[in-house]
Image (cartoon, rainbow, N blue to C red; front, side, top):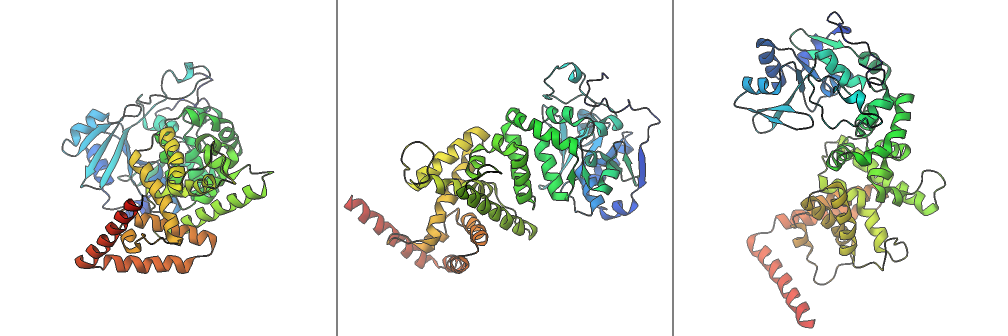
Length: 444
């Protein structure tokens, strides 16, 4: 291992290196019955090492309920596959692992211990890892992870947590830092910037100074990361319950200008912003604050709702001739929204289904506050495919503005009326709508 290696701050692991070990019987008692324990038990009975790793161990230690339980093992993917022949399959190319299924909704992600890729120290100035399938030991695997608080290994059989990276101390002190030199670890995978922001804001941790410096210096490299991975992390931030703080940190470190340039331009600079930009920034912060409150109450926003939160105010701005910055006069609102979402779909490789649905959610916002034309049928609108998601966004906008709550409640009542219509009432509504369309065509 050369002095330029991302892990050069650590001595090579030796067989007697046991790190820090603590008892974890209380934590294991909390997760009795989890399918991940069945996976670990079978792997260990077959002679392999196996541990719970990553976020689930971290969350258990800070008192959160883990969403997923990931397993790391000394077994190679094909060996894991042979142990679970009926309910597993190998996935991934950059990082190959095994998904083990229990029923339709439970997937245990099972990865083989990784070591540092052999050519990472010979790659010159370009540290970006494009393949990570070099297998190693449990200690090497812990030291290959991103942040110390994610490098803990829990053996549920022995009821012990193994810490080779100082993660327990950082958890106790509320500090987020990379494992090894952050100026080498961040460029390896710039998406770690978004992950660091997610963990710090969700856990209420302070990002260690050198790690934060590396994040600010490496934000520009997010442009080199796979767009679907970046979008996935942005969506996770929005569903984290700490979206307001996360987006503030994204602006502070420069990540937003790279991955969400339209939104960054819309909000303006953090310092020396105009009055209009300050108002837009405050409005967006209020929207995220409303989102966070509902996420804490169990709300799980869909991908189209998340996208509409990001781009609704931009569409309104670009539809106004007095504030438009895009070339040409603004077309109708539907086409303006299409301009914005089409750019996003191309840059982030977003599915056209999600982009189209987000566009319709934004367009529908104008239906909630009127004025209504004679051809508009409120009860049929309530039965539209995107109505519930559109109402989700309108509720968040209402709460962020602190006005319009009566309008929101009225639409809830209309929705109840609409779903309560019998077949005859529904057909009469549709007949009236068809007559209105025919009259409009005749006038044209």
